[in-house]
Image (cartoon, rainbow over all chains, first blue to last red; front, side, top):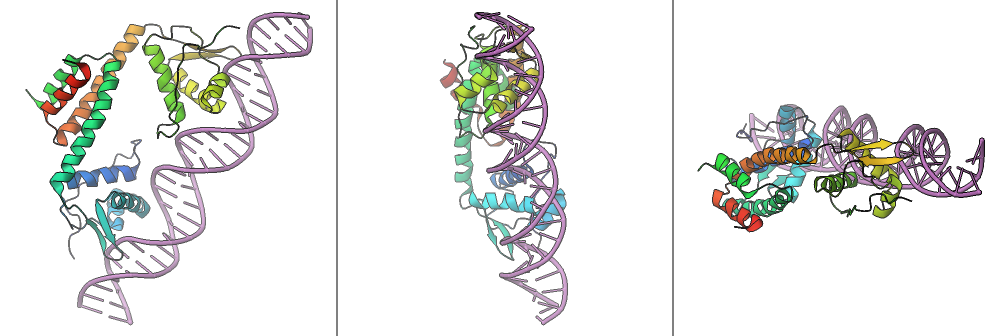
Length: 130
Length: 130
DNA sequence: ATAGTGTGTATATGATATATATACGGTATG
DNA sequence: CATACCGTATATATATCATATACACACTAT
C-alpha cells in the first residue's frame, strides 16, 4: 500500500476557539507553502486523518471541501484526495502580498492604540535579527 | 432628562464575521481608551442603543454583560450602565503591552511566510511616517 | 402614595455553525 | 467477484448568535 500523506504533521489544539476543520486547513496549506507537499501528492484519506486526529470523518471532509473550493487540492471519488499546486512560487508570493495587506490594517490599529514606531522596529529586530 | 452616552459613535458592519455584540464591545472600549468616556459617565441604555443600531436589546445587553465582566463598566438595575475606569493611563499602557505581545506572535508568522524585515519596516514607515 | 416613563432582567425561541455516527456508493486488485 | 481501501450522503446533537416579549426596579411629577 502506497503511503499517503506520510509527510503531514498536524497537531490540533482542541481548546482553541479556531474550529478544528480550520486548523486542519491551515496545517495543510502550510505543508503546501513550505514545499513539503508537491503537486498531485496524495493527502491522507479523510478516514485515516480523522483517526489520527481523533475527530470524525465529517470534520476532515469539511476541511478538504474548503481546500478544494480554494483550489489547493482535488478529490477523486473512491481514489483519494490530492494536492493541486501549479506554481508554488506564485502561490507563496500571492500569500505574502495578502499578508502584507492585512499587516497594513493591523499597523493602523497599533498606531491608533498609541504604540510608537520604535516599539515595533525593536520587535522586528528581535524576531528577524539585526 | 440627562443625556446618556451622547458622545458615542458606533457604526456596525452587519456583514462582518465579527458578531455584533463584539463590535459593540470594541467600539465602547475604544471610546474609553481614547478618553471620550470618563469614569462614571453613563452609557446609552440598552434599549436606546439597540434602537440606534437596529439590533435587539439582548444584543446590546450581551455586550454590556461582557464589558462588565471585563471590568470596563458597571450596571445599576433600573438606573443604567456606567463607565468604570479608575486609571486610564494604566489601562492604556496594559492594552499596549498586550498588543505588543500579540504582535510578536504575528511577526513570527510573517517571518515563517517568508516576508523580509525590510518589507515590514517599509510598511511601518508608510503608516507611522518617517 | 402613585402613575408614568425610563432603566435593566428573565424566559422562550429560532437560525446557523461546528462536530458527530452510521449507512451508502465508487475504485482498484488479488 | 470479494475485499479492502477510497469518498459521499443522511440524520442528529450541541453551542453560538440573535430575536421578541413579558417582567421587575428606580426615579420623578403629580
